[in-house]
Length: 108
Ligand code: SF4
Ligand code: SF4
Image (cartoon, rainbow, N blue to C red; front, top):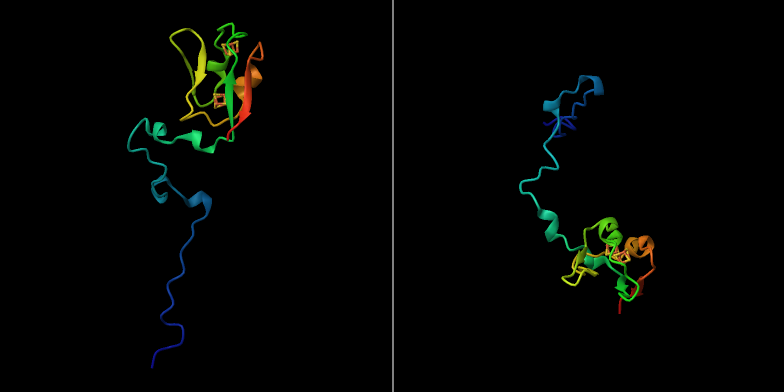
């Protein structure tokens, strides 16, 4: 006759922090390919989009520098626009623009 509780899995053995070495850690957060963030289209999150009024833009590039997603790009005519595939609508470009020529408008 089987003893009661004999099929119970063995209790895991936990080490104290001072007993751990690097070989005790499972590999994690391993990047197997570089540049994969471009596949992550943060524009899907957006509820507002930046709209430029170029009549007031002095082409200083501050909106380009401050965009955390590198979603502002310079057009051939020197003005700037958002790449809506990646713009997540945070509004930082509009907040930082010297001349207030970027307005955040609701997505429809
Ligand atoms: S709203 Fe945010 S993510 Fe979009 S262009 Fe402006 S700073 Fe970049
Ligand atoms: S920060 Fe404003 S003024 Fe400067 S380039 Fe961008 S939109 Fe134009």
